[in-house]
Image (tube, rainbow, N blue to C red; front, side, top):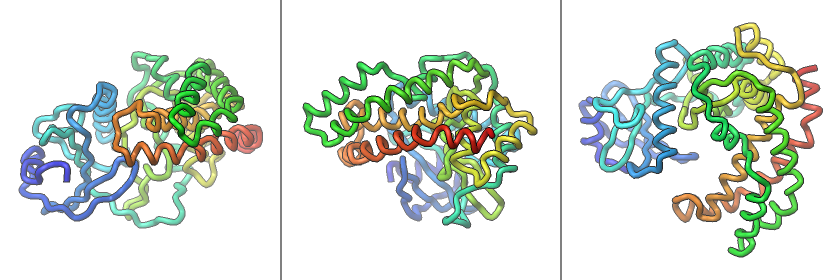
Amino acid sequence: MPVHLGRLAKAFGLPSLDLVEYRFGASGVWRLRCVDGDLALSARPGSAPRYVLDELRTAGQLERRAMTAGLDVVPFLEPREPAVGLAAEVDDCLVVLHRWAETVRDGDSAVGSEWLGETLARLHRLWPDPATDEAELSRAYGVHPLADWRRWVEDAAAAGLGWASAVSDAMDAVAEATELSLAALRLNLPRCVTHRDLNPPNLLHTAMGPLLCDFGYAGLDVPWLEAVDAALACSRKPAETIMTYQRAGGAAGPRVREALGRTTGVTLMWLAFSMWLSLGHRAVTEERQAAASDAVPGIVRSLAEDLDSLDSVAAELFG
């Protein structure tokens, strides 16, 4: 446990807490037992860099709006004295507590098109027209100068990292994906603050129905592009999801190939981020750094597959 359970309970006004288990994942979650039900604890170092604090602050604000609006989200616990967003500071950690949501289905991760389309439309109305930070938005779509990509590959080769040649061979794909990301952002569509990480692990299938979780990457995005990407990633019938999204008043945009720029852009973003972790550009554990190194070749293959399937996916989705 990263924090003392007694001090954690006090920070959230709870009578007592007991540790049940630790669940591995992208960031890891501790399952705790309370008198009125189990809880999920996520924690980050209190000395986290500014961008992490900004993410916590934005996530907390968006989750509060989602709960107030009655969206199907995993309920959070409000700390007695919030430090950043929904996080309390306990033992030099920033910790967030949610109610534990027990999943009832593991095999089929897809959600219904009606629920997803309507949820996306409601989500995108929560925080419209924010102060736009286009530079931050471009980074979320994996946009970096090609000279930077080449420098990272050179640094990797000098460090003897095995993925250097794979990324070097894929520079044409990186350039193509970058241009597609830029073309998607140049569609000049409305922006909003939204979840930004809508994929199957963050849509929990519970006895009460689907629940949206893990707002930790919340930030500025383009609602139409997120809707297209989420429909492809999470729905059995993405075209029906898009139609439902439009009927529910979602911020619809052009049904063109460029609308898939977020799908390839997210893959491009994760490729850059994994390369940074592998190169030691972020303060992470050796295990996390090694895992990032191992992941890079697979992300390169995914990027190539995304680009190869663009025309067929666009035809299936938009007709």
